[in-house]
Image (cartoon, helix red, strand yellow):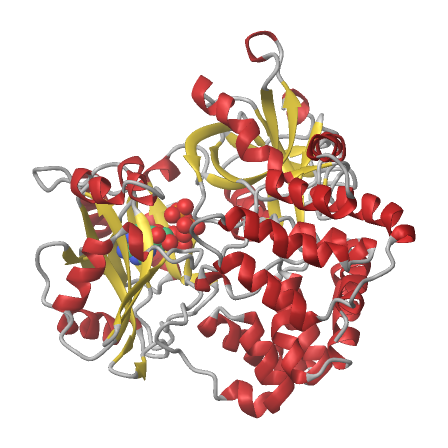
Length: 590
Ligand code: ATP
């Protein structure tokens, strides 16, 4: 298949912000494909050549891509770099220059999907001496044979800037439309939730229909999309929602891992399903040696521990997320895992069992000692018990508690946030319910001490229904000097010439960014705002909601993709739960 046909579809997708339109463009396209092409094409719509958990990194630096473009079109590297600064995106630069060059090119070979995938695979796999030079060659060979639109997407894919805005849920909608009917959508989503592999789901559906999809099961090595908790404003509300009794567990403040323990070894995945095995080799080893069984998938929270065995704050365990010097970090920052769920054991999917059965299997399947522990848990049936347990959790340096349903329906709901788990944190006792994980979509240049740097950021929440990012606040506090210095390096790769189509904003910042970086933010309250676009229309035509007095907590949520940020719906819910809602007009000082 010609790559130009795929690039043309990407171009169409990029020119619409409507999720419905994207779905129908994709659905029409999928129908025309051979089943074997669906998998790689689905990965490419996400700017990848493999599912996230496979850890295949294309990640070419802009300088290397500038070199490849320069080599292809016969320009100097410095002129390409200058154009990149002006246009903000190597893809746009390549498109422009290849368009000019085309008139001169005589010999070129058509780019096929197969060739693009094998060249991208080679770029991802090339290591060692002169690897940069070879990666550059692979890209320039493709650029030599590209038309301008193909060049735009090749450069965006290799630099991690694919901007078609196609969310995973849109791909699932399109697959259902192309190969099944609407009623099949939940079953298709289930297959995605248990495998985290959109390409696999697409290929199975195209090749074997719904019969194939219904055979997809939890599998060792394929991370399961994580289950998440809802929140309520008090322990009494939680107990009521749980029908008067539930299990309560300490809510540990560390890094969530999903461990796949098998005869051939152990893999640890983050909440975002990246491979974290090399960051916690000691945990992987201990899990393997303490499992009483053939294989298992468990979830737990990795928490740093001091010499006396006391839990350390979240920041300490993040030292284990570095790329280099892991041996030292393993010694310097000891970590324990507190396991809270088991999803698979000895070849059996346990996700459909109720909580109490899973908990028993979890505790029976491991020799609990050393680095391997279980979350502290208690069955609670009254408010005083709940209050005491919560206070104990805080004394043990946890952030609060997780209440878990113990009813028959208390299965592990992969990929969803619901009331089977409800979290309650110390911060909830203050006015605002929770911290938010917000996405940076723009920046304002600083003044005074912050001149020449970004002084404030435009922050957005994710709208699950539309796939858009709606603004909720302008964030200017909580940054220290070191963070402000690092910001341009963190954000500039995502600069966008104009407002990205996936961003819904009335404010116009000095610089726009593709929604990518997620920061944790606290606020004083949620109020109605004429300026921000989240939950637009909530209290009248022109009003959205905003977070007042937002403050950066210092926590960059690298463990979270933009589509895993706090959703507009969650903020709306917190707004409604606030004791006294602010009046329209309060937001003018945001
Ligand atoms: P937060 O930012 O509050 O951690 P989140 O969006 O990452 O929230 P939530 O579903 O809101 O996820 O809270 C669940 C998180 O709490 C889990 O992802 C896990 O990392 C952590 N956690 C700590 N202790 C437990 C526990 N006992 N059971 C389940 N999750 C726990």
